[in-house]
Image 1 (cartoon, rainbow, N blue to C red):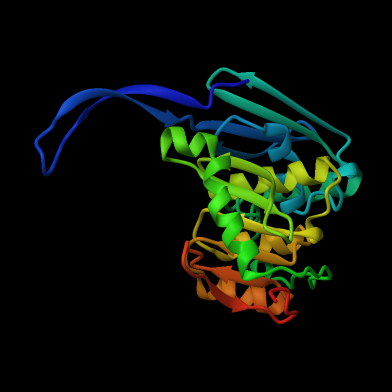
Image 2 (cartoon, rainbow, N blue to C red; image 1 turned 90 degrees about the vertical axis):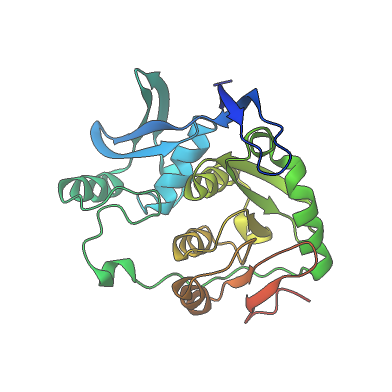
Length: 267
């Protein structure tokens, strides 16, 4: 497995007890990951070099380059000097989209907005959520309590985000980690798609603030409910309401905030 952490030397600077001292600390690896589509450079992301095949699948789905993971003809991942390269082979329609975006590149991000030129494109309508689940406050609390035990990289470094897919009863089925919150969710969505696990059958739990890009990824994956540990932005709330996504934010050990739940997924 690729190294996901790097040990660095540091000096502890104590503020209260003056107990300074030298130590060795693990930090998460962050490296450039170049994504090529049919031989053309599409984007360069900064990511943790783990589960990159999952990441490639999730990224392609989030970017709208493919509608289904089975449309990906090939995913090739290999290490190169200074980073990693992911090579995707797409059907004709996805290739045309990728080449047009690469031609008029205006941004490079991992939020599903690569190559979009105007506000209307950014705010294009989201597909309505079709899936329904029945979950509870107890299930959300159980998932929150269990998440820390699945954050291997997070526990060792304290510097990564986690994205988890949870069954309606709160049990965690799959977790992916990365230095970037968008990357972690892309990895998770890709892992579910490659394993033929429908995102419509559970809910997402993220150790991040709820920005609208994460809402969009959840909706496009077909997941009916998103739970985050931090606050939502105004646009995240607006987009969730428009798509019918159940949104739970500020999830803490003692409480959570139901921002919208039009389909009453939470009993």
